[in-house]
Length: 524
Image 1 (cartoon, rainbow, N blue to C red):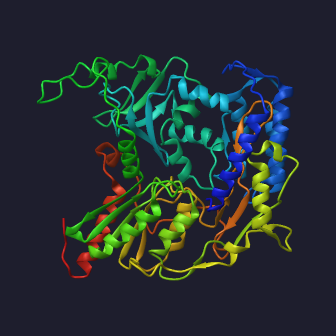
Image 2 (image 1 turned 90 degrees about the horizontal axis):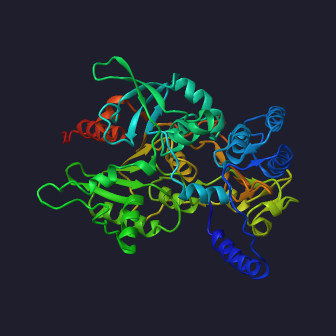
Image 3 (image 1 turned 30 degrees about the vertical axis):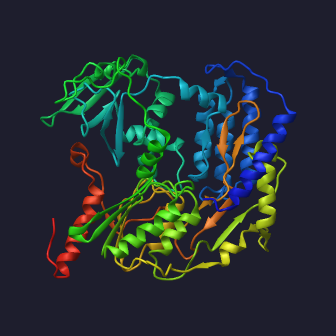
């Protein structure tokens, strides 16, 4: 969550980069992903890691008491008694940093290792799974010719490990806000996250014994190999398949697919990021917002959207922020102002613990962030440096094209950061209903705002370091949970197998029920 100070930061950073580039020299060292670091080297980086967190992180002991945090720091240090590769060291750091219980504070690969991962087509776990409670089911199978482990197939075990055993093992390494589990389930269900963590924790060995539910509802078992992207022949075979009704071959190796131009790619990206659909039969509109980041023209999009809603006399607005991981709080606040019915503050308190540190040389843009903090914050009697403007400033509803109809906000485990500010501000308003699952981000507050990367001096491993603690509303209970829905809409094996959008379906059902109660009849 970053405001317009980013523009100043970007300008200062560009000038600094040009200066360093003109004065410095580059040394190229051959990168080896299997390189092992000696225990003494690992301990040196680990000590920097611990010192920076203790020196800088404003919420280090927010959910984990200091004596407990000291225990976990010591436990991580004691594990460094043998040489380790970068991924092995990252596992140690991930276990410790997850104890902070801050979803904005996480471990990342070094730049060299990230470049390696971007180009290396490494073997993968062949399934993308959907996790919830003690359940896992197939969401996607990389082996598209597999007729057994299809979408929606219930998985009982992987190499003898149940869903509960897998999540109990992996969750301690995954960051989240407070005690939130919904975000962790969703994290493992997204992309290749489960594949990566499974490999780092258990290894791939010679494949996987999968216990699953067959079409007769009985437990069965099948052995599947590791998925090798380099040996995937499915795409190659597509070039030999005729397109129905045309007599022409599909684009393949012998018939290269034409890539869309820059403008077409931008249009496609914008359509995925934010789009509005109208349903005149139900006087409803469906607004999808997958980010609040800058660069997507969201301010202009909001103006046009709410003008259209007014002109079209829309009565019901469904806003889908299930995949919205946050972004610029100024943009999420603007959307809130089009919907909220009262004035509101962004934060009761917003502060950092210091303005500069002896570890600034390891922190990305350290000097620039220090300068911004110096000009934007003031020290209060509690000893912290407060961003007073946002603690005092009230925002008011937008008057022009303000939406006063029924609002249904779809939330889930990927709803995070600024998205929780948006959903939390509207929760409890008489015409607003939150539908879905608990958000992955915190309802009471979070630690974010300015989030530079820290680079450890020897291994180059990076971690995110949020610098400001945000308490949204101090009257709320600090229970470590996300924004809870008013109406639950939970995943099911049946919905997954049919590809049903169960949360949108639940919102449509609520709209139908309300329409019937108001005496307007039902609609399809």
